[in-house]
Image 1 (tube, rainbow, N blue to C red):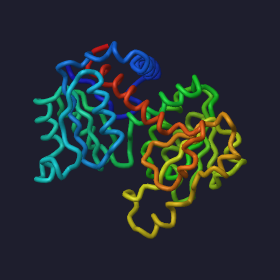
Image 2: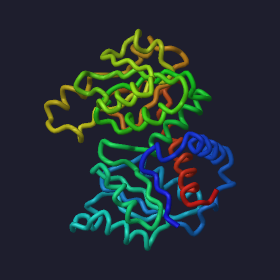
Image 3: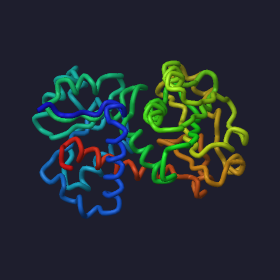
Image 4: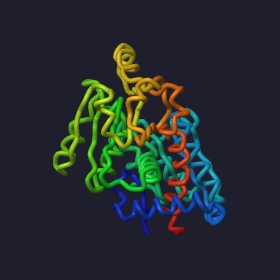
Length: 306
């Protein structure tokens, strides 16, 4: 049998997404039921670029399930530094592990690996393209906070051009009913045209605005903040000009609805002031916690243990 991989949120049907979120909820409520579900199983974390939350949450998920972890945290610590191809690496890793999570700066690298792999491969982020497990995390967080997706207005703010979390989330949420988007960014960092075309084709309402103000926030159910990613810019000058374009502080948040929740894939830089952290609407650390539960559910699903 060929292993099943996860490269994009679209690899899972809406029904499968809902089932996986139900499983994640059960793991959160009854961790003892799953404490030995992956006994004897190994997860390989193949991270060719730095990561804190994604890598550690994968490792925590596997260990919570009773499994073990091996891998590397940067390309410099792997044979990639000697010129080994992704295809050769995954063939070797398939001999050592039962499932792999791969982050790579080049778009499509995890897909290439999946074509040669004997074990399930999870795309843990490839360049500015996709970040499906962050999307699963975001979906679980939104459902946990709001109880549903239907009829929600999602505001996405900041770097919408290079933010792979944004692209994946729009794609995933677009499959639910009566969703609409408010896309908040400077003109230089707008959502790529292919994402806009996707929304137009599906008839999904959206607005593109520049200002994060009371008029923009008053209709939002979720405000999803993102950082301006220095590593995606070609020159320092453009990054410096953009990095503080949006700063959500206590004064600005006072203009927002009382039932609007704030999310952020993290890490943050300046875009959310630390004074916001104590506001009950700030849910980005809860969001990070949800990442462990949904990645646990994903590991169990791809390994065929549920």
